[in-house]
Length: 465
Length: 44
Image (cartoon, rainbow over all chains, first blue to last red; front, side, top):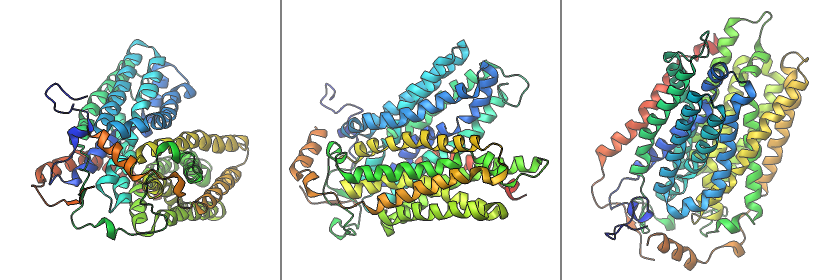
């Protein structure tokens, strides 16, 4: 709503239309400030054991805030995607920051007062809404600022989501240790955990402020210097038309891409969720050695690096080779890598590690490339809202992947070594092949779903008045 | 629709760009360092 002076309100889209000369290279750090923060959710395990000891709860209960957070991520991205597109990125970033920070503060209160349900509702519920809105908040803006390199732009931001845990994991562990709440200590002080949550909330509030202060949308007639829209690489799979979010979900392209994303994520989570245990089962000696424990920890860390770098590298490559081709690589080579791990992984540790890193790099890249794939298919008109709806595939995979791997591995607990995982890996290979076929079936969207140019232009005008 | 305007007017906020990137890169480098010191154990 406009202020009394007639100047647009602080959160309004019109207030953040970039002046001439504004550098588009300010937009990736604004997006990263949000994504590096909300990526903390992948470091939830740093709190897990301390909470179990300090609040006398079990493993299932201590995982609840994380699980609820991921479910809320997908749901809120789907529900609020249209609102994010309509209200603009600053509004979305302020709402996301408020929810994410409030989640930590409520969790701090919950631990301090001994009310664990407040931790679940706060971090998982309220914070989870912040995750969903924050995740999609910069995506369509980045695509508009980098029409020449949309894969690179969204890759940088979404790499931040992978890198968030890289920062939060050691930071949280060192903070808990300093406050007498380390999981490895004989006793855990719950007040130390509460203080750590409080400091996380305050620190992330400050860190994320760069995002909503710096974010700008390009003027309607802006284009990168030296770039001609008419000279844009043309391809049958890159549409110059626009499809609304409401119509997009009626197209087979949307649901085929949903299957592609869901199964690509499921296959990655298959390794990610149980990485440490898988490594031990493949390479442990009898009796178990301390060196294997340290190596398994390092294995988890290097997978997070693969997950993060894949988001940037492969999505940038997709700008050159095209979105459909890059998903052929993620799904096709991913399936072959799983076969290699099954057949020869236990005989060569370097080969096993390289295969696992590549699989995780494809997992991350699947997330990072999908906004550009959506833009190619549905245009930029409501790409944020469409992306939000597609993220329900992530919520599904977040439940499906761990269930498949853990259920099969648990049912075969009496089978020694790598053979324990053979059926689970076979399921992953099958899912990747189905995803590959779904990707092959994706064709340009039929003209009957295209929005008339005047409707798109009218909506843009309305958004800026 | 009006013709496109190239991004050639005004003065790019160079100092702001540097500060903004440092804001996000420095915490990231801390995380990366913490990761790198664990890697030797993987092949050890």
